[in-house]
Length: 123
Image (cartoon, rainbow, N blue to C red; front, side, top):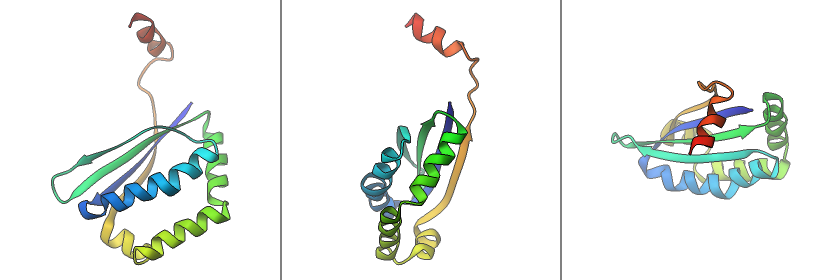
């Protein structure tokens, strides 16, 4: 399995807009193309920003790359994304004023291959 964390630091006043965009636009296209969302969470940093991150699961890194290629080549999805940025004042404004940090990171398990299965059997 391949796991990825998509991570953002978002200004407080933009959180609702950002989450709505994820739920209405990004999530459906990811799921349609085969991505599996483990979960998505946020944490109020107390400094005027929220940390928002999602954990995604894929069968392999190759599957992840195939899904991302499909997502990015979906013309109707790309038009929705661009329209959303335009409605917010443009991509540059969003990343200068609302979304302060973005990371896309591979997650590496610290468990031995059979440890997780053993833990589940005991519960």
